[in-house]
Image (cartoon, rainbow, N blue to C red; front, top):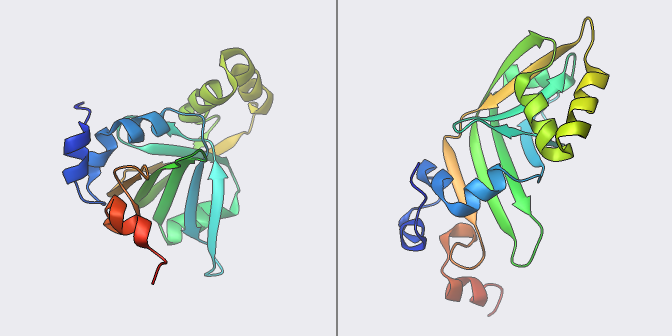
Length: 173
């Protein structure tokens, strides 16, 4: 994988999937920040749900236990948006859009166990997985292959594709 230089990153438009190769995107994809997944619920209203995730190198994988309501909602309307962001100054944000592919499995989703290890550490992560694993456990693996990628660092990349000067002028007459 080629990590983008600052100059290469500045040339790519928001939406370009090559932004996944930026240091900012790679840092957030391997961080312990939560992914916030937006989707449309069965009643037609928007929802945002914070979730642990695992990056496989080409998919963001989120997991939930069956029979979570979001499973059928994602099957009906698989288009999702995900943000993984760090609340620091300046903030850093990775914005993703794609289609969720939901697969139900018996037992623990492998990426769920990997995410638990990353978030909680090897020992505690394994203990958490062991505590929820048992006969009859079913999980849903929610895989999103990003089709649109946005990166915001509020130093070189700003919302709406603005330059630093344009962003600084926003809201002023």
